[in-house]
Image 1: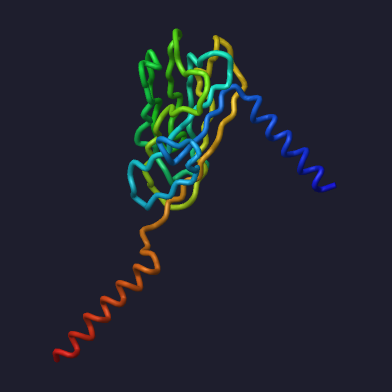
Image 2: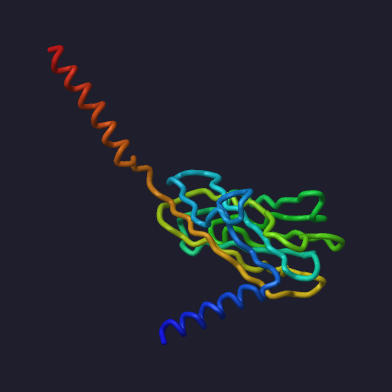
Length: 195
């Protein structure tokens, strides 16, 4: 019975994912949308990058795309830049949105009534640069911005992914600490032998 329930749940999950016309996901790589969604930064590190990919499975191009990005846990990250890609004049105009701690980005916009985001993908939409202002783990997620997402002049079913960002304190790795202790011990032994 348990196996049957899990099978039904998995089928419904895949069906709900495939019914979205626009799928927004994150990656740690500019070129590979499947590279992973877990980013680790050191405390105080600036401009760590998450890349935003969009897959358009609708029947026409996306002519308007407004996105917000949130951090689940305040005090860990702040957005320092949101760089929207514009290859071959994909967008007529775009704005990066208001940058901050939470939301990280509010109402970024890109539009083109005669073109826009092509069918297919996932293709790179933007780079979200993050500064580590605290330590801990937070979930970064995307949501529809105030201006909406329009495909063929209509709102469409959407699916948003998320990414995990870990900010760690600058504690040396155990192997580094052992190496530093060995060097320090060698210096002390040499100093004692000279006396």
